[in-house]
Image 1 (tube, rainbow, N blue to C red):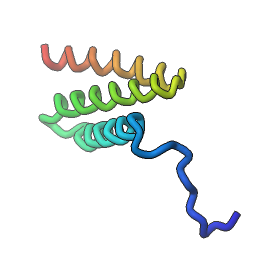
Image 2: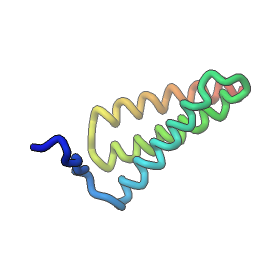
Image 3: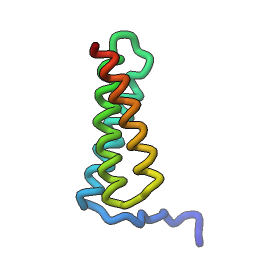
Length: 87
């Protein structure tokens, strides 16, 4: 295989999971860009929670147990921290 050839994606485009994974990724990256910035903790947690919720949905669609575990536990942690921040 030539190095000049582009690697093609094996996942289908423009399906529900495609839109969800891109929206989730944008939300998580947005949250990460705010991490550690004073006064933005609530936004970081909110965007992270929404992004991880969407990634959990994608994980369920794909029936990927490792991603379900990662995002399910991550969602619990984020919801706990969000509740503590809002209290």
